Length: 122
Image (cartoon, rainbow, N blue to C red):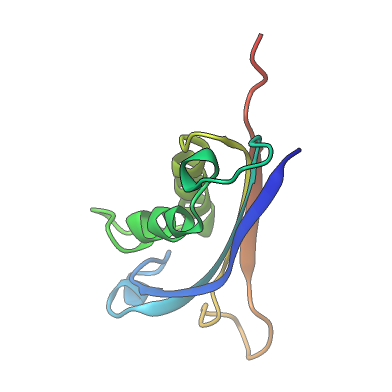
């Protein structure tokens, strides 16, 4: 049995973006994270993935990085790196939306999503 654990709609105000003017002030990013664990019948926190760790992984990338990320794809990859290093995680999916992205005209909310699956043990 596997459990799916998630964090939806986590809004973080950070300074990231392709254009230099995007780095002058914070802007909102909305992050959804889902992990699948291989734990079966978990009855203790240390036997599963703490959903607080999902938020901590996002914060580490969006709020604590030394350099701004220029692409959402790079931010997604960095969060996935952290999640896949979490004991018990067999799959992770991260989606980041950028509601105030510079678009040619109003309408729509761009986002990037990617998933990773742990390599099977021999």
